[in-house]
Length: 222
Image (cartoon, rainbow, N blue to C red; front, side, top):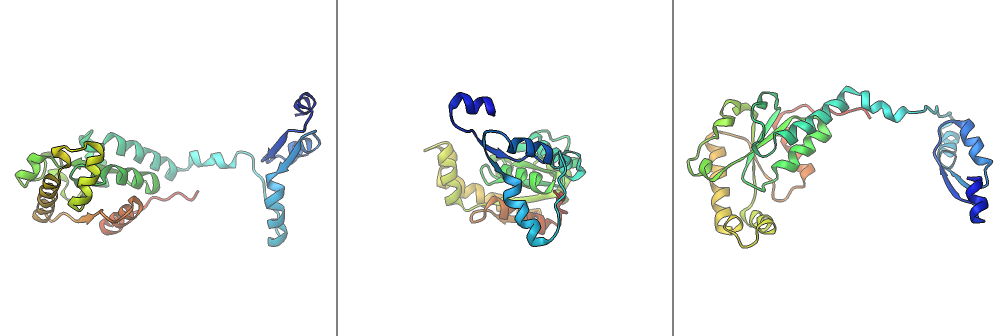
């Protein structure tokens, strides 16, 4: 810091977040302009709360050893591996398997539930063949109690798909109307709970699914 001050002819600006008070004292004696983050915010809080804060070096890194945190990271890996009908041999491990037509919000919802709540969520896309025959895909037939359907308004679905494949049959309103109608019929036939995602954010979708499915949230204390 001192060498930089001499070389530049101006004091360096320092944002100090050191926990060790001895190191902070040394930095304060340098030729830099020091902004002590802890002193700026913690000292007034200590005075107001009439208690002294206990600094602990490396405390924030303790999250890596938290089993709930670790579970959430593993849940994210699971969601990625199982995305869009991926590795199906591990469906036994799933807390939830989302079904829905393409672009109905399955992937971001699975990832959000994994990261925020440690929920092991897989998702399976309903194909034209599945829908036309009004039958559950063989890969998920054994897991009826884990299934949850996502549906969406056809107009919104068409808009989303058009951004991906403009002016395609995939994005046509007629095709989207057919897929949504057949998906809902499939959910009703097998009594699969469903949620219309059209007007909800991913956070709201995830919260509603977890509440409706009765899944425990594995939330870390950090």
